[in-house]
Image (cartoon, rainbow, N blue to C red):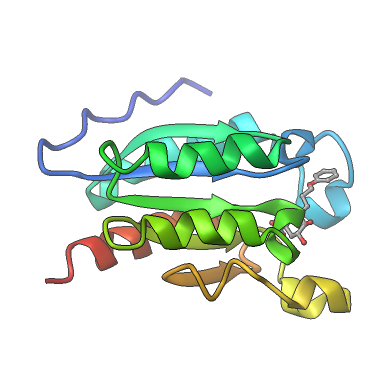
Length: 161
Ligand code: CA2
């Protein structure tokens, strides 16, 4: 398939940082029955293709298996992003440190928590998100579309006033 070059971001585009948590680098390589066949690179490419069509400029797509790297990226986005779309992976269920980092920037940054799978229909421990109370909202269960809905939700929240 020919590569699609996304249009340049509009000058007033909403700036969104995409954060992926632990093990999401394995997408498409392991457990395709749960998380699908698309790799993380495929997902990032789809997000980058979609974002300009809804007025969003993607600042960066960053994946880390390290809690501290995700925590560092959140306040660092204060001056470069209007919103963060984050799939915290398994940190969703216990990282109060990531939740605190989100709270610390919530005066300036909208945060959308996203999940590929419907965490509420899975094991008991996945039904609890310590991130959700700190985030602006949560989207789960739509596969790759969860990220695209997250990007649209970020745009809607940043431009609502
Ligand atoms: O559904 C989601 O997006 C999750 O955030 C994915 C996390 C899981 O711990 C959350 O409960 C829900 C797991 C990401 C690990 O992804 C893998 C991909 C391929 C193979 C193994 C793990």
